[in-house]
Image (cartoon, rainbow, N blue to C red; front, top):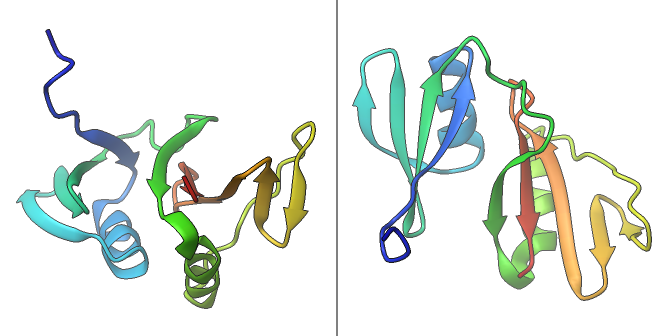
Length: 125
C-alpha cells in the first residue's frame, strides 16, 4: 500500500529561525516552501525534510536523521567542524574511533546534534 510512495522526514525545533539558520546555513539544505512561522519544507538531494516548530523539540534520544554521504564523509565532517558543529562520541561494542568517525566494520558514521539536540548522523553507506 505505501511501499511505492515517497516518505518525508520531519524534525521538530523550538525556534524556526534558529532551525532554518542551522539546516540551511550550516548544513546547506534548500528551503522549498515555508508555512509562516510554523514549518519549512527543505530539500536535500531527492529527499524532503519538514522542519516544524514544537515545544517537544529535541526530546528524541535516538537518531532523528541520517545522511548517506558516501566516501566524502571525512571531508564533510571537517567542513562541518569548521562551521562550529561538534560531533558526538558513542561507545558501541566493537566500534573503533578515528576522530569523530565511528568505524563499525566497513561502515563509518559520525553523529552530531542540531541546536535543539536532535541527533543527526552522516553515514558512508
